[in-house]
Length: 204
Image 1 (cartoon, rainbow, N blue to C red):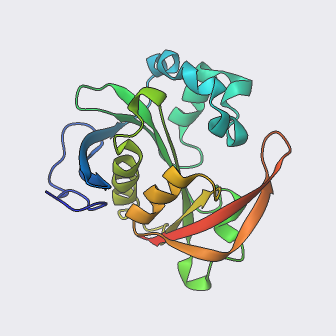
Image 2: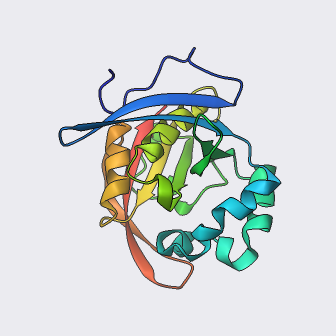
């Protein structure tokens, strides 16, 4: 059994875009998550309506303003980089993971915590549907997306922008091998609230 945060062999792929089989350790318990990334489908819109009222997603996403059908359509276009639906082995929708490419991401990719040798810098974002949380889905999906990033010439490193009290997301960054950088940065969320954000960086 692999240790926390280790990626599966790249040959362990199915007919879907990417797959990742991860064993994660929480205290003395092990949870094994098998996830696959695929393109968004129009019918996925109904499965993610619960995220319209998710307080963490609402801080940074315009999903609530435009609705899930339009949101899925925009993610399918991939104008800012690949955005993938995270699914279980039976194609059950579990969440979302996206890689925003250099020049199309948030100011986190050009903040003072980013070093010259980090460039070009992309940005990783993800969320997990409520019923799938606590199973290692976010870590597995992030590993799979970083695997995809390694095949891209235009990305040398990836930043994760995380609020300091979001301990679950910080644990994901740590399992990816990301390093926390200083200084932290501040940005207004979509409600106009000024948020402090910790900056994590991982080389690809």
